[in-house]
Amino acid sequence: MSVAKKEYKRVTVKSLIEMKQNGEKISMLTSYDYSMAKIVDAANVDVILVGDSASNVIAGHETTLPITLDQMIYHASSVVRAAKRALVVVDIPFGSYQSDSKEALRSAIRIMKESGGHAVKVEGGEEIQESVKRILQAGIPVMGHLGLTPQSIYKFGTYTVRAKEEAEAKKLKEDAKMLEELGCFGIVLEKIPAKLAKEVAESVSIPIIGIGAGNGVDGQVLVVHDLLGMTHEFNPRFLRRYMNLYEEMSGAISQYVDDVKSKDFPNEDEQY
Image (cartoon, rainbow, N blue to C red; front, side, top):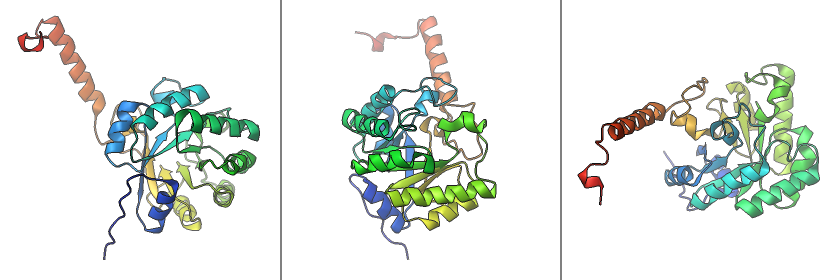
């Protein structure tokens, strides 16, 4: 017998824990601007992630490392103005929390005060324990991120699947438990074996959101530009494209150019 799902007028960190307890999967997508966030929010996505992936898909950088705290706050504030239902989680960018827990707190406070975001996300486990602890002590909700952590790409040297070896898998499980015990409200697991991700999800009481981590977790996250087929050159196994906007948009823009060149646009009905 199916149980009616609870309707949330505004999703909170408490809502996500309730969803896990009720067996309801959590949907999460990225957004970086007002117009896209308005569409994503209206589609009843539970969580909008203002990801440092803006460094890639918006700014064209090869990695997430170059984006700054000021830029993340700009993107986040645009998204917050659009989101009426979704919980807005904001990535703290590389270099703004790793080495100094006091700097981590300052960065998190700036994001919350200047953007209006509802929570922050950080990458890493035991090595950022003090930063996570200090941010949480200030009353700021924190989401963790384990597995493939793009901010550490030069340490890994590749975007391949993480935690396939026993030692790394053991550390990931320990880090997940530690993040839960510190008080994080959820964790993103990126590009790890599905079996391991399922084990982690079953071992903690907080929601585990996967990207390339199989279907045994509590929810899924994708980059919205990938889902819509705007970033057509990116083809990982975990990505399902729901549209091919690259071709649709290219065709529309080419048609516009042709219409301008042929003097078809604007026609008599399109002028004053």
